[in-house]
Image (tube, rainbow, N blue to C red):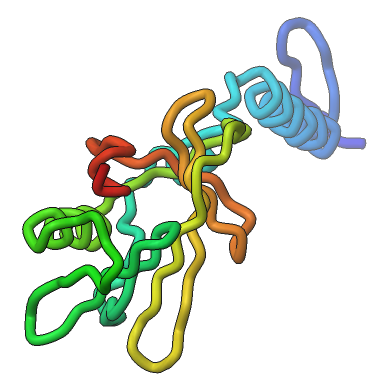
Length: 163
């Protein structure tokens, strides 16, 4: 082996090929250490979806009827009326419908308890949705079709039920 094919670094004499191999392994080791030693952000994507605020009713659906217990609110001629027998005035019916139409909510991991009532929403085109309202541990909405629980934003149970 010729002398010009050997290199001496830190008092160690090796061939060019051996030094190249050492350099490659050192870079791989450094990459491995930096990858596994860096702090992880494991829950960042799930936290972003959990804090996502969304509306209950998509904009492309036309809400026609809301049934809460024995009260039926119907949309006709751009206003909401409660079908008799009903304890809600026209203004209360409008407020309840407006609350449901503008309802904003975010997903939650809380387990609902103390079910209050089922609310049935009927849309144009024979589409329906069921919303279960719970009051424990706080006001929660459960969508049984999706098996998901949501926390409503800036509403009370009274404004949702018209009581």
